[in-house]
Length: 349
Image 1 (cartoon, rainbow, N blue to C red):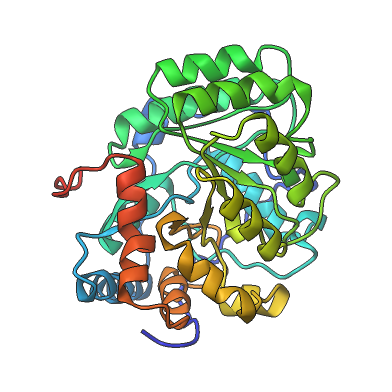
Image 2: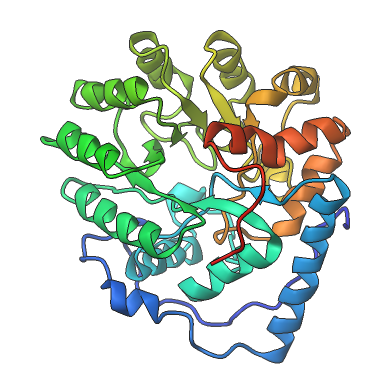
């Protein structure tokens, strides 16, 4: 694979909704409508590019002797919500730090899932998140339906500091949620808010991982940075926290937390890519610490909302020079163990 992110043919369409944060309170699409999504034709050029990239990604994990990849940080959500997210990136909003952020995989839902399968991703997530009260429960309802019709997606849920949050978190756990997502930057809330204490407690007791965007990248928020999550962990030290983006840009502070708490993990989402290194470079002095934590680092990519091809994330991890054993653990084995995936992959749906 190349050292620099190659170009990829993408769709020229741009959503028209603007002036909205990356979420909406519109009800989710019906299962019937979602199930028929992705039937639009793509160009021959895009199809060829996708096939070439899939071969490149599959070559990566086969050369490592892996049965595929596990990606703990991918975004699937109601289409209207995702279009709001894309519109926000297109508009260079404050939550992106005003950075130009072209979406590489602006395909329909079914096409995106099919592309991950073509890459050989055995399991992925539906990272979705509310930005105001009243959204989390119906997002969870949509995600439960998506998981039912997408067996290779790890059933994902979310929450927000509001009355009744503990009740719908408990309900989601009872209905088989495998992983939760919290986005401190977009939600604009303090994760140590007492309104969330019962939620964290339920997740810690259940041993259910929660991916939290709590670092201050790409732009700081009122409650981003290591302080708030440090307070959460002080109350719930057994919480299976997965720090998104390696905690970018407070990498070393979140390495501290990972070393201090045995159940804290890190995901690699966007870290070490050319895009992120220009914005928030990872300190090379900290690489030995990351290598030593190899059993608690998980592959994440932010697919489809990335401004470069999927393979570039794998290139960036390879170029760290931490060895094939580290790559095997990060790109598959750690998450497969955490989520109890079978040793032998099942055929894709």
